[in-house]
Length: 288
Image (cartoon, rainbow, N blue to C red; front, top):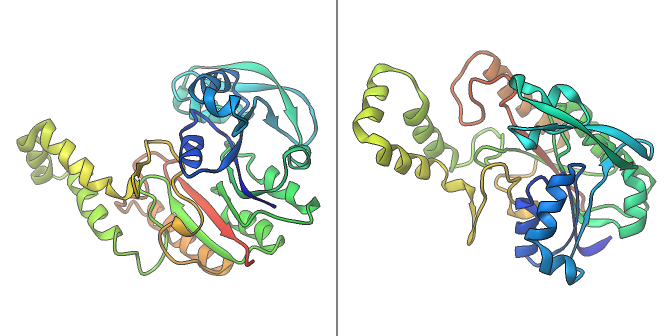
């Protein structure tokens, strides 16, 4: 393992890479979208030139080759090798051909990172499965997932023992009882989103300035020290994440508890009225 190295697999607009560089890590950033990589090379020119950031414009697939990658025009973060992801909400999308690599070949070339962040719209487990061939493993891994059972099983088979499921809206952990920060977020979230007549009247009365103030209150958990995570960022990692580390069984149970609550239509800062909005990252750690 390279102690000062982070992989940003699914770089998107580079906001996660910016945070990792802010912390002083060397980064290998990977994205299949050619435009995202071109933009990042301009944004991070000094880091690229200085050898502190490597940007790879490749897709992660089981076998090397060239494949159609679907770029979502209105929500680039939905771009994927899976067309249904890019086409979500009838979004305009187009295909581009991109070179692809197996993740294991990238690990062999650049080394095993201290932290592996993966967010590649449905193909995240390809990176986890590639770790099986390594004699050394990342200390921390995170991946976007709605396949909690399969994801925990794959990570547990590699020796990961601590887990947190982190909501990507406010970077709160899914745990019971909730962390202290969850209650104020829930309060401001209700004021901003519930459609009861009194709350609609309140929002109208306070105007846009008042609603913006409430939104800032609701989003205070998007701050880590002197850094504010913009929308779409993955947030902090490792010991900087909120909440306690859970066992694999516990994190699966708490995830299913919240998923069942969502299906019952309960109001929560962990989702909205979109069926795909229960948006979480599974974080895992290995003992030293």
